[in-house]
Image 1 (cartoon, rainbow, N blue to C red):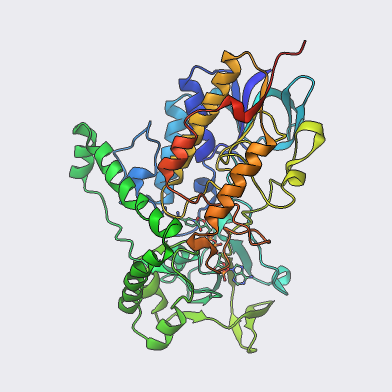
Image 2 (spheres, rainbow, N blue to C red; image 1 turned 180 degrees about the horizontal axis):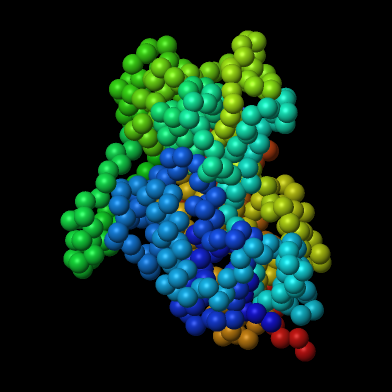
Length: 484
Ligand code: NAP
């Protein structure tokens, strides 16, 4: 029997594996359904893909990287960083690439997880760490005629890198974080880009820049410099949590900056009018871009706000009956982030995670779920951030998982099952706090599930999450001991 099975070799899973190794664990595997590691940063190969968190903070604190070439890392650089981490920490022998988890079931008698994989194997492990992330199941809109479109349909997260857009009419649906990176990258190539906007986004200046070789050399050679830079960025971003979670009106000041950014980026008044959001900034993710607005101002780019009626063989048709020619339809329509994993994960008494989450996802500290002993979720319910780097949340969770594993060893326990009353109280408090945040000011976003409940975001400071997850408190769990 293994100590741990980690599912998913993306950012979260790779970091967990490194931390396990550093703690002396050798008896674990890392399952990955694709043939390469990297998760989000492997899959999102769309033109212009980059991170909107500065590179110095979008890396593990225990594996700093002085070589980032830009303020904001491009997708290729992050992916390379993750592959380097795998090499450097010798994770190869633990990796099972091309191996998908088909089903996981907790065996109450033996207090272990039995995991079936796509290659027909069954793995038994004491603990199951779920590290698949929640922004990986494409939201494909239910548009009449989309299935019989005569050209190519591509979702931002499943980009076909052989797709040649030169001289093509491209329809882009969506104006979220993915679309605002795609449009400026493809506009100079395509013959025409028609952007279908349902809701305009708040867009702030990004101020991306190359990092000079001198600065990189200094980061490498001056002790503490890279750490200081990281701290500086961290506290700047962390301060934004106040606006998101305590006093949404503070975001009004930022709205003025975004309006000026729009005025500077788009010359045509009619186009500008289409791009002004009507919801409070922060309710949906705040977007960062310096080239999105200017790209919309190009002669070969149209912003269409009329709703889409249907897709025909070579066109997208809007409610006003106008046919917008298209050879390629780009779906930048986001993800189904609030649904339980699509595979069967059965806990105590055969209850599945899908059953337990029938009324919406919830966990204790985003990590443990009552009735699912020794299951640990990374980036689980209500651990997402609107204001800072997700790597901070992942690292807090690594420590929590290691603390749980240490408790099992120390007390000679077989399993930890978070108490249902503890989980319920925790979530009642969490939801009460979420009700006072900017995310509850009336906009629709992927943060909310279909009942309007926010099951994705952490309503506070990252240091508060870190403090709460510092160690596992045994009194909050049912402790499952040795069988007699
Ligand atoms: P998203 O933020 O959910 O945006 C989806 C867009 O598609 C929205 O504009 C939405 O309109 C539109 N849409 C969805 N269904 C539609 C339909 N049936 N008809 C017309 N429009 C439709 O998705 P995303 O841009 O992929 O970003 C998702 C998340 O991924 C981000 O919030 C962020 O956390 C992450 N991300 C991060 C980066 C980064 O730089 N780090 C880059 C990309 C993505 P409505 O607003 O009206 O719903």
